Image 1: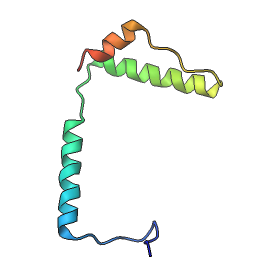
Image 2: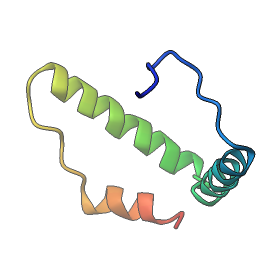
Image 3: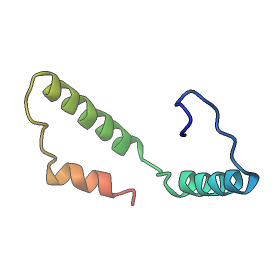
Length: 74
């Protein structure tokens, strides 16, 4: 029988170590360094999508200029 969602599951030490290792790697390798401009643009895009969703409209399209700014940090 599977445990309920609120019940604590005790995992073997090796399994806990494995999950800790992959969690540590994923967190460090997936971090991005954004410029102030890129971060501001991402926030503006997110807010524009939120407004469009609230009004029942499709999300705005990204222009070539926006895509270029977001790609600069890669």
